[in-house]
Image (cartoon, rainbow, N blue to C red; front, side, top):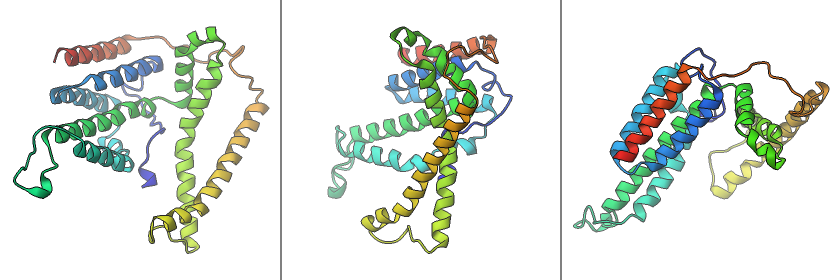
Length: 264
């Protein structure tokens, strides 16, 4: 299950999506989230789904990889949908059946809406990290947040911290998988017993994982200090970004999707 988590991973490529300016990809991601929460009809979800299909097509990343990243989050999706079923209004769908009398039209509609919204939200936002390297993402975040320097906020440091956090998610996942396999080889049991016993069995995983995370953080800090890293002050850019026709085409398509959602 841990191997299925693809959050924070970057898949190198030369596709249309990879060539987009990282600043534009950040803007498109924000507009996509806004458009998704504006949807109030199932036809709107169909439009957003078609947009995701285009993103998958022009990114060069197979659908299998994208769907694999959804597997670890299915519990959250099902859990959220279940509570929407319980507290939805409307007329009973099966009034003659006593044990299904709680199932109402409003609850089913809300549950379907929530499932579609969460799945499409995860799919759409994941492509930001799938097609953008951590270095490019750091530069894009810093440039987008640059106006906040007026309020004396450490913009470069904030962008660096967010990108490092995303960068180390796959590393920590691999480390967790290694620790679990090592503990299982020593006879640890993580799959039987009640909830309290299973929670207690996680202690031999969490302690080595925390020690490893702190050690990696210290090594990274030492490496940055040895390279005379002093934040964003006086830094020059190895690559200067500029918008191309691809960026304006992608922005136009996103705006068209938002207009279509508003009209329906």
